[in-house]
Structures are given as structure tokens and as C-alpha cells.
Length: 347
Image 1 (tube, one colour):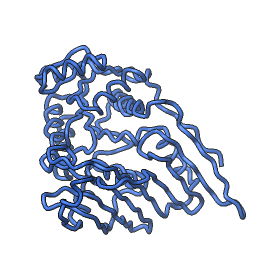
Image 2 (tube, one colour):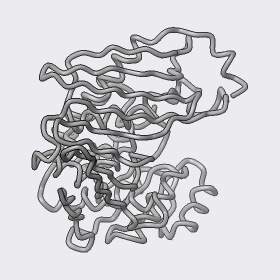
Image 3 (tube, rainbow, N blue to C red):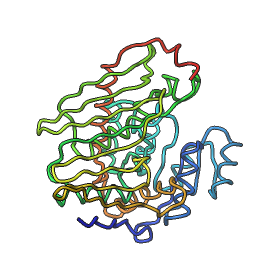
């Protein structure tokens, strides 16, 4: 079985949009750098509250204009990338949508399904494109995996599994440990394995979850068994108090695919199928970039293509699915066991 070659969008065959970035954190910097190195898109304005820090960010990342007034940003761009703590995603997305600007919202799209649907309704009413910045969907390896599935090379899909866990040292004011900033493992890390399972199997019919959550609502770790009426199942796990292998796998009746760690970033695929009494293994490695976060440019190129096509959402990651993933997270969180967080404070 020969693996299909990826067919990335030509970054110079899509409209060259003027981008505004809201936020000056590390992911905003990597996004701007990826666009400028590998796409026809350009970040022309950055906005944040601290004028000095915003000006320094603009200088470091080749951005022409730094402002503290978001209205000035919205007046000067075609599309907005929102890269601030989770708790502000929905409000800032609605603000950009009200200004009739296309919007790419860093994951998670919102802090819950109900909040996500408010943003989705606003985008649909305004007729602008809204996308979650789930960059994994737009990577070459994801296209190869989609084609293996659609071509029937894996047979009937029986099982999907993915994990993403890291250690966040205790900091009550920090984003991960602060409830007011949307802290916890599920929204920051768990959204990746849950979205991965959703991309293969869709929305689950049953959810059985276990894990730990603090009295103030910070989910520390969670593992969920997702069941589907068509007979398949998935396991998604996450943690902010332990490190996991960051692997993903798709098991079908004819073959299995291992997405190499870290599965959510540009890595590669290993396909294994049984031929007689031996395993036949084929591997594809993505060596396009030496810096993995340069892969953030793929999602911006995709958004520009969709804008050029007149779309208002991503065909690879529809808005209803974005809300569905957040609904799964809401339902997992509701099943977790409340624990005393004191034993994790020295992590």
C-alpha cells in the first residue's frame, strides 16, 4: 500500500490578507513568524493593552503597526487572529465579527459549548468566516490520514486513541491554574485528542470519563471513553500534572495508523497492515520545516483560500463540530472527581 502524497495549498494561490493579531504571547509570535516565512499572508497590526510590550512585539516579528486600541486594528485588517487567554476568546471574536472581519480564534474556540454557539450564531448572521485555530486539521499528515480513510485503505474504523499531557507548575495567577482565565487541562491540552477523535468518528453517543478536578473547577487530568452507535470507540486523555507520550492512533479492520509524537504538530505517519504472517509497515515523515510551529501557517493559508471561495466556515473543521467538541469537554468535566489540589502544588 503506497501512502498518498500530501497536496498542500499553494500559499501564493490564495488571497493575500492583511492580518491583525490580538495578543502578544508566545503563540502569537510563532504565528506571525510562520506567516511571514512561509505564506503570502502578512500580519500588519498587533494590538494589546501594554503599549511598550506591544511595540516590542511588533519590532521582533516584523509587524508594521502596534496599537492598544482594538478598534484601530479592526479598521485596518481583513482577518483577525485572537491569541489571548481562553476566557477572552468569545468576547473578542464577537467584537471582530461585529466589525465584519474574518476571525481565527486560537483553540479552544470558547470556554464551553454554549459560549461557542453564541460566537457561531454571530458569525453566521454577519456572513463572515470564523475558524478555530486547530492547526492540526490543516497539516499535511492530516490530509494523508483523511485520504487513507476516505479511500478505504484502513477498512472499517474500530478504535481511535490520542493523548496530550504536560506538567504545569502550580501558579494560582497563571493561565493554567486560574479559573477566571479558563484554566485546566481539558481546554488547553485535551481539546487536541478530543478534536482528533472527532475528526475521525464525529460526535460520540456515549461518554464515560474519570479524572480529577479542583473545587474551583480546574480539571487536572481526565481520560474519556467515547462510544459511538456505529460500534467504534475512542479514548482521549489529558493531564496538566503528568506528561504523556503525545501519540495518536487509528485502528481499522485492514490497517492501523500511528501519528508520530507530537501528533498535533507536523510529524508523520506510520501505517501497519497484516500481509499473510508478517506486518507491512510504511512511514511518511514531514520534514518540511525545522521549526515545528512554522506549521501554523497552513491554517492561515486555508482561511485565506476559504475567504477567496466565499466560505463562512472551514470544510475541514465545521463550526458545529467545534461546538460539539466543546460539548464533549463540558460533559467530561461534569464526571470528574473533586480532589484537594494541595498535593499538586509542588509539581
